Length: 149
Image (cartoon, rainbow, N blue to C red):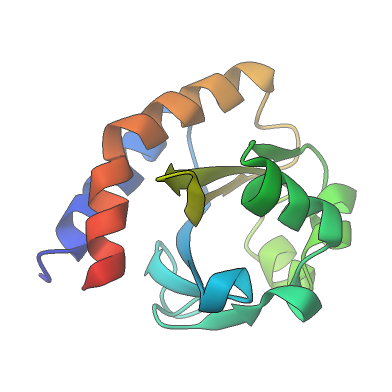
């Protein structure tokens, strides 16, 4: 296994154990935040590592503002929230996901990546945001290292 991927597997298992998750990805912001590149995926067939999203076309402006600019978590409680935010909502829904928590990974005052934690509609509560933040803090260095690989 790639040295950079193994710690991200540990991150995935931490999310699995402490929150539950149907789909987990890590997206690194590239090109000054214009694109996001997937550096980890729990579902590599549907969401392959290396896949990219063009921020201006693939995500809603309020999601981008929360994660990239304001550097705060985004919580989409319902399938409608997921549909509104992400262009690939149909694929997300087909995997049984209807709730999402996104946690920005910040380094040096700049958002470098986002954790994307998805499960069934209603699976997450506000308490899970705090759990996700704590998990992200434990694994920030691993995410930053993986981005450089």
